[in-house]
Image 1 (cartoon, rainbow, N blue to C red):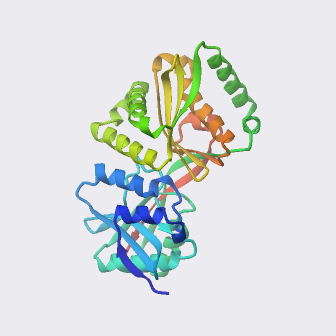
Image 2: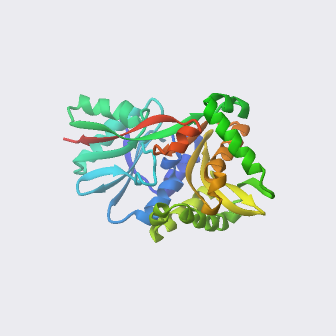
Length: 326
């Protein structure tokens, strides 16, 4: 079945996301219109924005959020702040969508696709790569990183039972020590009207916690974080977890809550409280809260930091793929 190529805008993508009749699979926060728009606003640079849609009748069957530069196309977004990337496609329409997209890219003079941060179940690996092989395109896929995640059980007690004896003992010991401090509590912060205030505190703790983190938070990156936070708060997906002493945050995490999956995006803490393990325990307490809210997956995101394994994370490989269009 044929389809019609369309050139979309961030506003039209938002309309698609808000319209369940379109049946598109927005399979992570990193492909949502609010996220893509925030990234483009800050980091767009000199690349050409290419939001290509494919329609059959009145329904959009797929969206390719790409940028084009020097004859190549890549996903909109960058792997340092967008942990997973993919196309947005209605289930069962993948082959039709990719055939039309490849023909369109070729007609526009795009010579190759450079696609990064791909989960094993991404549409790139499950549908685009096999189709590219059928077309005799040159395809190179490589493992580039790992992500970690945890399937959440129904109760906190079941979660503790999933850990090794040593992990369980250490976590209980650290929690007892934390709760032994006077006037300490854990808070979930998600009032959209206070997002700017929350970000002020979060960014301060982020830069305090590690020197390399302070170097990462350039003025441009800070603008991106603030822009992203406002956009995702407006969409109802952003929240912060905070450990506080006398109502003053000493550790914070920034997470996104989407489709029963909680994404641990970033964190920071006051180093003078490092002996209390407040950086790790803030994550643990948010994980506990996520279990109590019935969420299904806790996503530590990209990187193999030791604490992720200590809390129970399991590795998911991430790939990059280059496809020569000819």
